[in-house]
Length: 286
Image 1: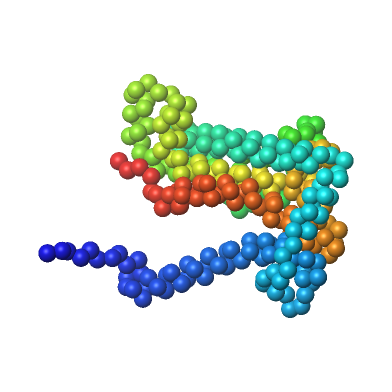
Image 2: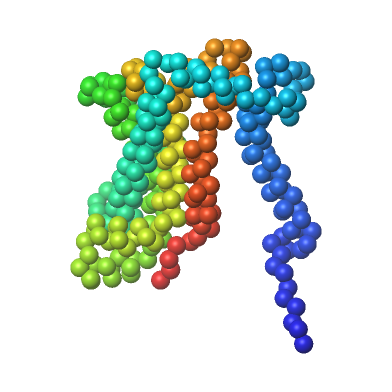
């Protein structure tokens, strides 16, 4: 006699499953709509961009906006490859440095016991309430005093230490059982080895999530407050300059948006399974 396996109902019933599916489908469409709108705007000719009422599809697809964008970029006195190098260099340096510093500090705050540990954790939680724009004036004063204006340090150092990255890693490392740390100490491992050879492999979903957030934030760095040398400007600043000619370059601006959002999307797609694991996993248990 064949036993029929009952299907797991996430909503408690078939109707509940359908309702959840419809809700998630609508939320997914809502999140994809800005990306879809940016893509179709970049493929519209100029006469379609200003039609009223606006249409959510392209009647006559053209690549002229991308051609104009590339022509404008190639005519700059600084090679466009230099801007690409600047953005890639800044994004990679900030991502790696943020991963190293956030993970090391998170291990100390989660597993090392020292005076003032609770106070530091509270400061980090309070720091989550503030955006980076609040500290721009102080950052500029510090950078100017150190002579770092118009250098790569001016757009990498302020973004290396972030409260969000530190909070994320600390919360996930806090779920590692203390017995694992004690076993490592009995085997003669110090804090550095315990952090990077034992704890970090067990929190891989967390640091991959941090890499996504760090790369996305670093790729969007404009540096307009600290960088005035054209040869040091990253791609977002250059794209803003190209598309800042009013409605005449509305299509070029849309093409610039599409190009600048491709690298963060690729990084997210590559690591999305680990992001979902981070949100769903509860870590190791004793």
